[in-house]
Amino acid sequence: MIWSILRWLGQVSRRIHVRVILFAVLNVLALAIAALLGPVIPAGLGDLIGADAVDRILQIIATSMLAVVTFSLTVMVTAFARSEQQWTPRSHILLREDTRTHSVLATFLGAYIYALIAIIMRSADLFGEKEVVILFGMTVLVVVLIVMTMIGWIVHLEGLGSLPQMARDLEARAVKAVRQAALQPCQGANPLTDGTELPGNAQAVTAKTAGYVQQIFEGALQDMAQRIDARFYITVPVGRFVQAGEVIALLEGGKAGPQDIAAIRAAIPIDDVRGFDMDPVFGVTVLAEIATRALSPGINDPGTAIDIVYRLSHVMLSGGCGAETDGPTHDRLWIRPIAPAMLFEAGFDPVARCAGDAVEVHLAIQRALASVAAGCTGSMAEAARRAADVQGQRGLRLLSDQHDRARLEAVLLSSVDGS
Image 1 (cartoon, helix red, strand yellow):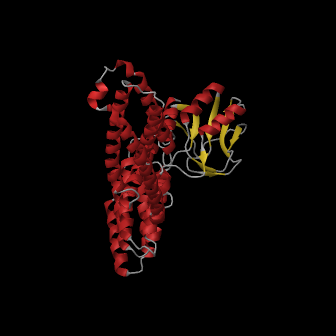
Image 2 (cartoon, one colour):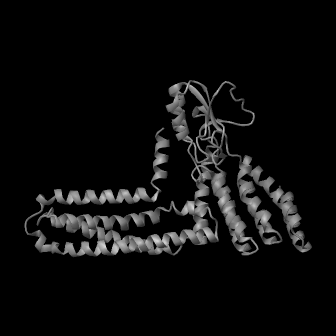
Image 3 (cartoon, rainbow, N blue to C red):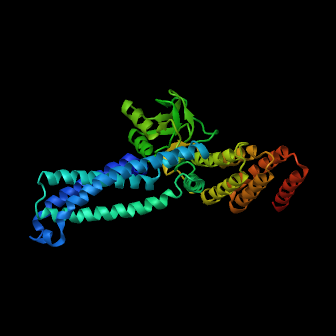
């Protein structure tokens, strides 16, 4: 349960309004502390350090930060639009969770709110001769924070929405999700497979709205199952689109009331867009979308497709080749595992299908899959070998030039001999 709460808090913290509100609250607390610490300041210190200049500094912060926030929002929206048009429409999901951009906007807006409230408090004579010294010190700290944030923002803008940065961020998110799925393919629950016998007298929990299953909070479900003495069968995997009224879970044993049913739905959140956190197939899919768009006739950029192919292989090697440690730590839950074949189908199938006569892309796919098969073991390596065979045969059918076909056949033959 604690892990589920921490995971939820981590996801909420990536939302822009949360950071802005938090920074604004901290600034208000800083002003309150400045007013309370006034009595401990020695008399005459304000004249010594020139604390009266704080009014002018606050005016500058209030005036400039409003313009900077407006400019930063414009840059962010422009980067969103450019990324959606050039790379993939799903890129906005990643960009809107960019913590660096959120921190920058929160800092600028928080500084504006700080200056505005401080000016109001100064006009209301809430800061005396001693309190203004604390206010001056905090204002100097705010100025230093603004300068440091601006420098970091300028550096961040160099790659915001660009292909290298977008591919790098997508790759990192996909590696994280694939690694989690490899270490715990059932999230610590019992595997729910096609051979699992579902209870016939179970109580069904249906989706309240249509959308994609975002994730499964297994800790919360396990605690609830223990409380009502039941067993939960989660019949839909993360990333699956469900219709309103479709069964998403079965309860065997205990009886769940209306509040329990609502809690179960909350532990299996559904939204109209997919997320990266617990959906490794989605991360791989979005990476592949960049490659397929690059291979479209209007763009014709096989170099980008090759780069994405190698990034996909890195995702499989770095994330999918860990030792499986999944066990029934949540013994009252049954969850469908992510099959390795789904990752290769989502990642390499679309690229190979769109490569057409681009033999260099087909060769890159074979090299990438060969590296995954050599670097992994078990089901991941077997899935990579099957994918290499499927994509190789597809490449032979798509290539019309005999010389290109011979190059690909040579690679396929060497792979067979090597295995």
